Amino acid sequence: MEEWSTQHFTDSVFHEKPVPGVGLSSRDQTPEADSLPIWNPSAPGDDSVPCSDPVQFVLARRKSRQISVRGVKVGGGAPVAVQSMCNTLTHDIEATVGQIDRLAEAGCEIVRVAVPDERAARALPEIKRRTGLPLVADIHFDYRLALMAADAGVDCLRINPGNINGEDRVSEVVASAKDHGIPIRVGVNAGSLEKNLLDRYGGATPQAIVESGLRHIAMLEKRGFYETKISLKASDVARTVVAYRLMAERVDYPLHLGITESGSLRTGSIKSAVGLGILLSEGIGDTLRVSLASDPVDEVSVAYEILKSLRLRQKGVNVVACPSCGRVQIDVDKLTLEIEKDLAHIDAPITVAVMGCEVNGPGEAREADIGVAGGHKRALIFMKGEKMGLIEYADIKKNLVREVEELAARMAVDSAGVPGDGDT
Figure 1 (cartoon, helix red, strand yellow):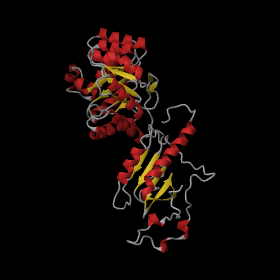
Figure 2 (tube, one colour; figure 1 turned 180 degrees about the horizontal axis):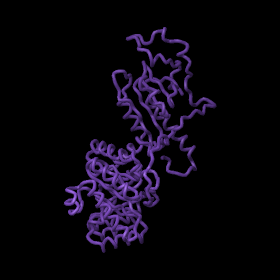
Figure 3 (cartoon, one colour; figure 1 turned 90 degrees about the vertical axis):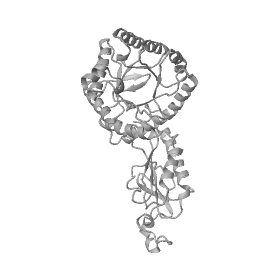
Figure 4 (cartoon, one colour; figure 1 turned 135 degrees about the horizontal axis):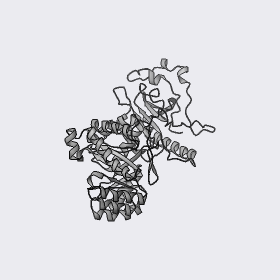
């Protein structure tokens, strides 16, 4: 391709310190170092396309039963599903549908909406009609809203059986869920536990959270209902992790992970990454929501980054970048942010490496599909750790973006007709 330098690549560019004001001396330009051919991917007969390998080092998953939220499988070995929740007023149909559309574009697979009153419940049929995402109705206190939501055609009910006041009302909600063929998420929050449990355990301990969840599960099982998933959330990592570990040992229902009220985009992302990362690394978790005081689209982005870091999902571009130091010859920070932004539309599981120098170059990023490493005056392009050629600094971004787009297109053609959601 025209942007690649016609000068042969020399390893000395990356292994010898340039002479200030001069560059590499002629002594360093040895024939042996000049042997790498210039990469020309458009040359006839060149079929050396890099291939992503998203299934390396797959973590063992906890065995759980499987439920379905309108076609999205949760549990039973299915990919960990990504959820979010609208922060619009649900009765504002236009705003809610608009936000759901943005969430769907970001890769959200299940969306939840609050149903605090009858106005919100009455908006559900139209919202359901206009969205393709599975829709979960979040219900508290008033069991009649759960009945209205089920009649409206939602795909799942999120309830806390303990706060809808009475076994008879729980029975009505369960009967409605059975009639409509929809699952129930039992949601337990540390901030709303039963008073007798708080008294018994001396606060909202992990043990208290788990006992509350088990009580609620028992209410559903007593009525022959088993299409259930469970969440056990606290606003701090330690309690949440212990609670999920305890519950994972007691039941085989799928678990919905989250650190509730985790904070802002920055602090909430860190807390969620730590807490959910611990659990997911232990094989615990079948679906998740990253709860942030931010745009819900950010929740989806952070969720996928957490899953990609553990190779549990490989949707979209994974950018690997060095932390930068005094050796670098390129603005790694700026280039990384620009590449992430320009490749945000790519769904294919492609890894791109942005490395500042030879130390963090092809060797440490050998699993990248395509990458760049800064050198003296020019940068090195590499694929799967193999050196391909040199490029001018000014041309790095446009070439990387173009190559990733072309690779994604080839991967789409290769996978056409293959069942599945395109990632692990």
